[in-house]
Length: 255
Image (cartoon, rainbow, N blue to C red; front, side, top):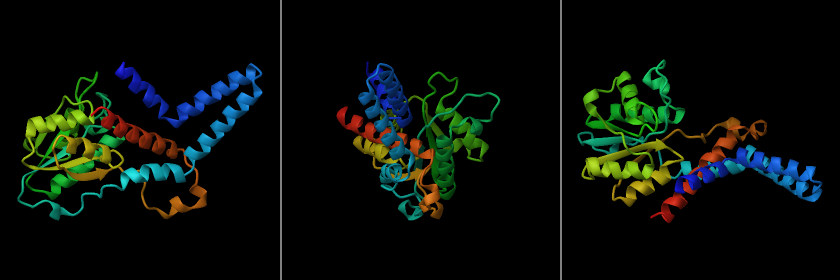
């Protein structure tokens, strides 16, 4: 029942799905000669479309999430001779045997991997921990990330994994159980996901240093141009933002 509820919520958080559903309902009501209802539905479709395809609302929603935590740039937050865990959260892959491990990663997972490797190279006493389950895949997300990292030059003896977690809450609990909370932890995930991830990790007693990556909002003069007011990418921004806000509400409700 819970899984079904999650699927329904995820479907409802995609503005394109809502636009399609309302458009179909408008067509059905028009066919049944309920013209006032059809007109109201079409107005709602137009409003939702304009609100989600133009920059202001999507940028506001996703920007509030992405700017809450700063990137991991100041290395003074960690002593150079201090043992550090760099935990890279999973974000999907495709088990295509014709592709190298790095090519199997989703764009979000690749961004997280890149940031994790960057920090690993900056901190000589660090190790990288990759997280994520495999679902129906032959290999877990953690294993694919590990193979990709080694192919980029990361030493195999400085890589660890947690293959079982399927949610961020499980990733936090798994890390605490396997590695404890005595050491320094740097948490790598997408910038929009970082507020929810930090909340869940802090809930189990961990105090990670945030290392957000994969920003959807970047300062660019072209973004402020009227010619770039509308973009299909904004649908994804709205979907990502609503997913994170709903996830935080769910996490608080399920506490």
